[in-house]
Image (tube, rainbow, N blue to C red):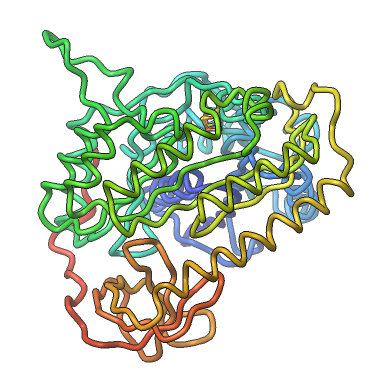
Length: 456
Ligand code: SF4
């Protein structure tokens, strides 16, 4: 009988990437995807500790599965990802019907843990060190034309609100030859767009050494090397830290035709006092200067950001400083978050937590300002022709694609994913654009060889 698995993913792009590898591992062992837990032999929750209420959601989901597990003792329940790394033994203490807890560094051991759970009972592997990058594992990608490529794991910074250093550890970069081999394999598969992933992606390579050479491959070198790979037409990366956005990276972005005209440039706060309390190593003036330099070097570049409202100790003046930076920066989009403490982070221990009603009121003002700015940015594109890579069916019919500047465009018609086309923008909305097909420029590339076995 066919064995089936059900995989639920919570959280960020790094988790989506890990989920592709979890699915790939299970499918390489003969499992097939299921839609319903009742059909599955293995149910996996790939968790994220960055988002609010992650633990409540996880334990709620685990509670729903308990009766099913009681009826079907052959069902294996797995908790993977950041919460598994952070909460460790606590998960099986609170939900003893969980069979496997697999941390962020232990994904390659998943199949082995499942087999051992069958023979010996509950298993846990929350090792502290990445020996094999998840990118080295087989992948089951949702779309044929796009791939996530992990270039580093972990982070050497210590932002006081962030759980990442605790759950993903210090930065470890993949050797550049391994990354390039993976991207070359993807290009031969017909992948046209890659997104390079790292918690602090622009410090890629600082922890690498090349035997016999003082030189280290850095992020700018990686961008240039990927740009030379035939078939890769769009390169994106996330997330960079403003402090590490060095001139060589800006030059590489400007020089490399495949590197898209979009950066995610997390501001977090416009108040220097709050930036200091967050342990962000830049100040608002420097941030705006860097932004200007990037916009000069890469004309037309779109800039998105993250902003946290209500960090402990944030006053009305601090919040006004954030609004002022947002007015000056005129971001294309902003991902806005209400601060909520993450247990285990320094900020969670800080006095002066801001009352929820104050945070809510500031949040609404911030969102209203950004919506107006976003709409203004979108309107600048009305009447213009843009290149779009089709991603799939749109939410309201037709198709949905993305510009090089990472703007979502809806079009009428049936056009296969992976198609490049030229469209004219006919209407702007705060979060998407409506376009009309001008002409198809390139059909999707057919797969030319099986899924590459990436190297670690
Ligand atoms: S740089 Fe990013 S990942 Fe690293 S600690 Fe700060 S917020 Fe977290």
